[in-house]
Amino acid sequence: MEVVSLPTASNTKRRGSPRRRAASRRSPQKAQAQSRQDSRGKRRVRRSRARVRTVQPRNAFQAGLLEQSKKKIDAPLLLITVMLLVVGLIALLSASYPKGYYSSNIGPFYYFIRQLGMAVVGLVLMWGVSCINYTMYKRWAFILYFISFVMLVLVLTPLGTTLNKSRRWLFGFQPSEIAKLAIILLFATMASAKSESVRKVKGLLVYVALIGVYILLLAMEPHMSASMILIVIGFVILFVAGMHVWFLVPVGIGGGIIAVIAYFTLNHVQERINIFLNPFLDAKDTGYQAVQSLIAIGSGGAFGLGLGQSRQKFLYLPEPMNDFIFSVICEELGFVGAALILVLFAYFVYRGFSIARRAADRFGCLLATGITMQFAFQILLNLAVVSGLFPVTGASLPLFSYGGTALVMQLVEIGILLNISRNIPPSKKE
Image (cartoon, rainbow, N blue to C red; front, side, top):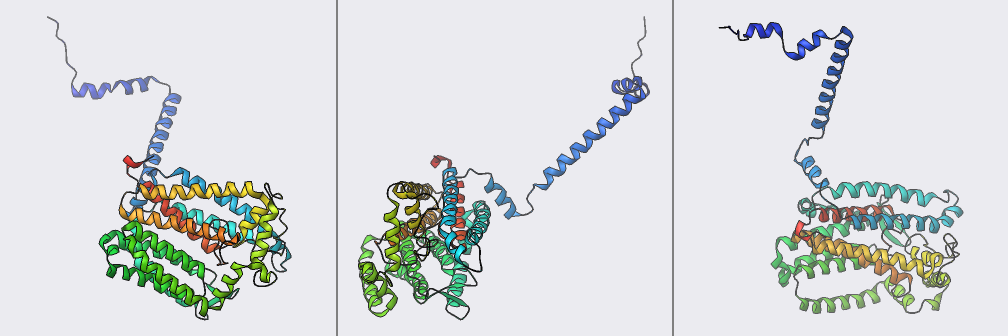
């Protein structure tokens, strides 16, 4: 019988593995090439592992940002925001060119470049805010309210800046823009935490006191449009939260009494209401803005004079790039162009309320409602002013009018809306 010897450990070690035996039969050049290829592969593996390690979050906040950024965003709202911003920058370039051109210290593109820079900052902040879970703002609501209160008080001190008979600026920015977001966050936080508070008179008095402090400070600037926006925002949030309709009766009576008192005691309010009733009575002085705005709108006709061809912006219209930028748009683009822009605004508001309706929780619903209502009412207020349907109040057109603080804060608020859209439950996704 033939005896078959089994391989032992010593034999296996001596003979080596098949790969080693094959490598020993290769030429030295091939062996060196294979060695270099193996080393390169190991380096690639080490680099890929290093890259994987770098994206790991270092703390809970970074983990939250990473998680939020992976969620689906409301693409239509983001797209319509970018479209409105681009159109607004083009309109501002046209409207602000004459004022910059005729100014001795600045160039014709001064206002456009500044607004473009703030738009870039606002877009970066918008995207960053869209990656922060909106529920975190509950803990910041009272802090932001207090900070905004302090800034509104400082505006009334010598630190504030006066322009056009109004003291609204503090170190180059408007605290009233921050106050709008502060009221929205605070009301949404309180109404979502204690829903029964909005159904009782005692609970409503707390909201009235909180917003009343802001309105009093804004009236001292004076800033009538910001006061009106805060009142509308606060009322809508409370109404959506469950406030009874019959509370409107005392609110309406109180508002009427305040309006009458303001008319007879505040000269600027009386002057603006009289101008509103008939601006042509003093078309060269107090009614000048309203009259020039109507001339600009009427000059546009159906299709306008052409982009950049406005005549009223050449030192006729006092604020062609601010409150009355829509008048310049009507003159240059006509009824058709202005109507298309209004369609964009309408779709923007629709997307905002759609996000509010589908929000994951009560706080998200109230927060989205307040932000969207701020945009909607401010748009309507500006259109009413430029068309002569409402007294001149100083209300700017969102995403269009010149103003760095307003533009940045508006984009930040849109970022909050986008984050609320990221957290919409799958069952409510469109």
